[in-house]
Amino acid sequence: MLSAPPTMRGTNAKGELLLGRDASDGNPLYNADKYIRKNQTDKFTLTQRFHLQFTPDISARIGAILFYDEGFYESFNKDFRTGIQSYTNPNTGWNRDRASSASFDRTIRQTYNATLSYKNKSAATASTHWQDLNTSMPIAKA
Image 1 (tube, rainbow, N blue to C red):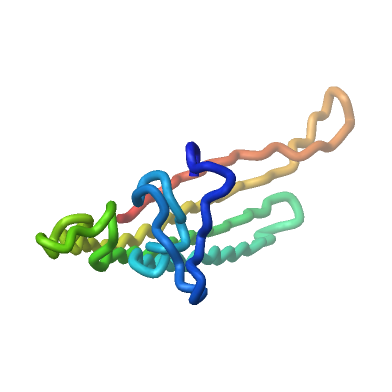
Image 2: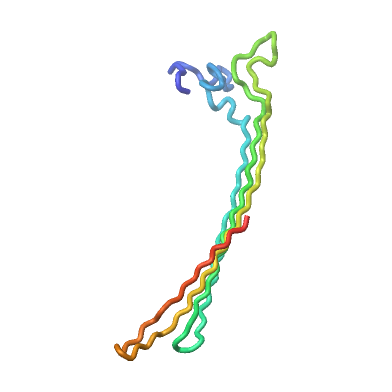
């Protein structure tokens, strides 16, 4: 209610809700039950990793990640008041479009990773350190 006077009553003497000036700048509780919205989303992530030791000097790490995202969205508008009613025309002051919509969306994303590690023995420095070969391959399926 942006421009409703501070003396506006939201209910009448019987306790029934009043629309006020009109639907765009009146009592928002009057039409609240006329808009039905049902939205639900489900998401989860699965991760699996393996470590393989081929020899004391060579090992591999392999991993996979799966992300699942699903959404269901539904809306429906009942007949709702938009303004003051008329005694001569029963359709005045009502929106009777009854707009509705529904949608469903599912996304599955997969990522695979592999790392091959080996020890590099250098005779010149007489030290041992690990070298990694890393590859990553994202795959997205809709």
